[in-house]
Structure formats: structure tokens, C-alpha cells
Image 1 (spheres, rainbow, N blue to C red):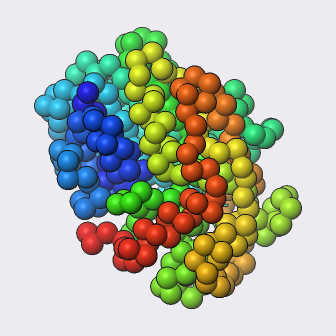
Image 2: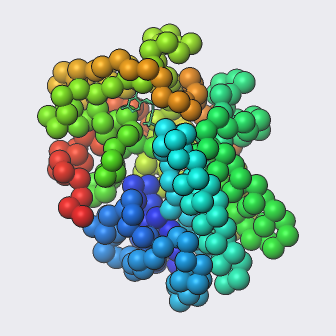
Image 3: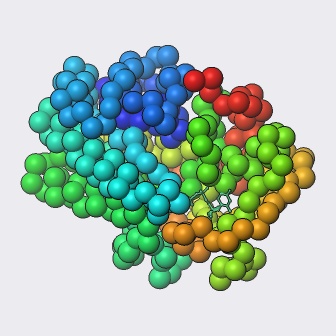
Length: 323
Ligand code: UDP
């Protein structure tokens, strides 16, 4: 089987592409390298550099690859940025996403695998979060992903394009070869590890007055390789719908810092800052549906092991990717 992977030079996309190749799939990576890195594209994959807004180019690339499925990772995914630059999120995640989706329909692709997010829920009514909770996003990032989810449901009903959408909680960790390198890093774990590497004097804690036991936000961190395995399970024909992917454990920002100190053996100074707009206080997944329907089980659920894999990668690649 042949899979067309948009955003396959980015963090999650590169590790999913690697997992697909390991599982025997042929992979075409489509990426504009705006966020991704050429050296994050597995050498066994075909690489097509192309922009997400060029509908004709996307269609030709799909026609040429003749994929059995498309995995769509290419998107903007920063909560904070979406609060200051919402148009970037609606244009790229919705308008450009639609160009890809229409090309998929035109080319007769049978299956679409979508990277969605727990940010589509907004602050949840109860924890852990199941897929049937109301979706009331509190940032444009979550809203843009929710809009695309809705389009997928209609395209499935009317055009028969089967889809599976994974609502990721907080992806973290690395594989042996590929890891997390954003040119401007805003995520918690890589920023904390930069301090451990001696590249930054301190990290920052955004908000210490949340209604949580230690006042900092709680998130459910999931190993990126476990995410990748769920995507492969989702390729089986007939498996479709919406699935949360997380470990069901919540860790506060302070607990993440402590875990990073333990794993790295370094002291990590932190500055307490105001809240970052758009952040819900607590997000913890129930992935029971993915476990039951897809037979998915996380292989690396412990935060310490997740951080250790990221730390190993950052130590091997202190400057990230060269390009
Ligand atoms: N966060 C923080 N300091 C940082 C980066 C993030 O305190 O340098 C907090 C952020 O406010 C959120 C949590 O850590 O509560 C996880 O943020 P991240 O950006 O890693 O992922 P998100 O949950 O936004 O997808």
C-alpha cells in the first residue's frame, strides 16, 4: 500500500512516515518545508516539495503517487500563535486543507487520515475526555481543526471518502532518528530540554493561578511513536470516525519540569509568567474508543520514558536538524 503524507517533514509527520516505511508501506511525503526539514524526510520515502495552497500541484502529486490513503499532518498547530494570527490558521488549516481534500476526492482516493486535536473540545465538562463531549474550542487553532472535522463528515457521507480523525493530546518524545525541532520553539518539553542542554538560561511557566493542584496547566503527554502506531491501525478499511489519542494521565507544567530534571540530571530554572491566552486548564484523554475499536495500546505511556526519548534525541541533535 502507498500512503501520501502531507507534512511528512514535520515532527509528527516524519515519525509517522518512518513508522509506515518500517511497516512495509510505500510513502510519498508532500511538504513545503516551511515548518518541516528536508533531513527529517526518511530516505526511503519519495519527496515532493510543494505548497499547501497550490491545488493543481497537489492534485498532480496525488495523481502521480496514486495513494491508497492520504495522511494529512501539514498544518499550523500553535495555540498561542493562533490567538494573535487567526487568519493564518483558518487559511492554512481550513482553506488549504480543503484544496487537499478536493484533490483527494477528484483523484478517487479511498481514505483520509486527519490530524485533529483535543483543542477542538475547549475546557471539558468532565475528565477523562471522551469523544462525545461537546466541542467548544477556545482558540482559533482548535476551531480550525473542528471546522475541518465537520467537512470530513460531510465528504464521507456525500462523496464516500472514508476518514479517520485522531484528536491528539500532547505529542512528545522522539524516535531513534527523528525528533521535535521547530525553528521557533514554543512547546513545553523541547523548551525545557533546551535549558538542560545549556542553550537557554531558564524556561517559562505560563500561568500559576489555574484551578489545578499546583496552579499550572495539566496536559496528557503521548509518545509520538504511539501516535504513529494508531495511524497505521487506522488504515484498515472500515475503521473510521473520531478517536482521542492520549494516555489518560495528566501532568502539570511543574510536574513536567520535575520529570525533565530527573531524566536529565540537571537543575532547570523556571520563570513564572502570566497565562498564555487560549490555554484550557486541564486536558486529559480517554482513549478507550481507540483501544476498543482499533486495538491500540500505548507502548510508552510513562512521562519519564517519553521525556527520556526526547532527551536522547536532543543530545544527539543539539542544534536540531541542519536544515
Ligand atoms: N507551557 C509553558 N511554558 C512553555 C511552553 C508551554 O508553561 O515554555 C505550557 C502551556 O501554557 C501549556 C502546556 O505548557 O499549558 C503545554 O504547552 P505546549 O505548547 O507544549 O502544548 P499545547 O498544550 O499548547 O498543545
